[in-house]
Length: 74
Image 1 (cartoon, helix red, strand yellow):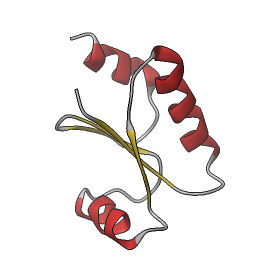
Image 2 (cartoon, helix red, strand yellow):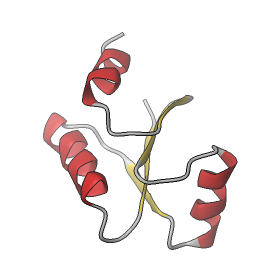
Image 3 (cartoon, rainbow, N blue to C red):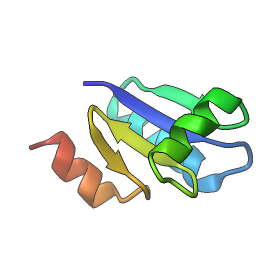
Image 4 (tube, rainbow, N blue to C red):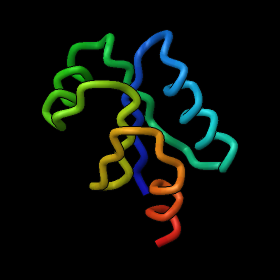
């Protein structure tokens, strides 16, 4: 399972979702959109805010724990 989280500085929901995955024991790659390549990737996914969570090929535009849990346990 490949988890990527697009974040930015001073983003409380970003901090929340990173802590969620850490507490659950999942490893993830953080992609801070302050770096242009990650910002472009995020735009390519039509995301307008952070965090954007990508799990394999699934995209979650909000830190909706119920939807994320359902996907992880499917």
